[in-house]
Image (cartoon, rainbow, N blue to C red; front, side):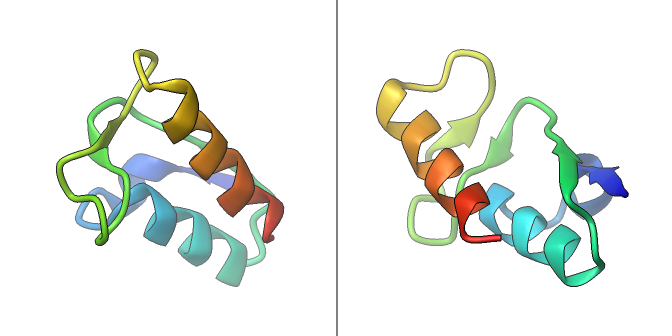
Length: 64
């Protein structure tokens, strides 16, 4: 089971990943423009994300 990250549109990508995992979800579908994290509120997640940002998201996903 998973979710669409827009469910957590008031939260960051990292928070959406955490909340999906807490609900038992193992899959998440992202949407463009969501803020990456509280630590980096000016970085958004979309198909133009830098390699560094992609790595951060992959690392976060690997935690769960």
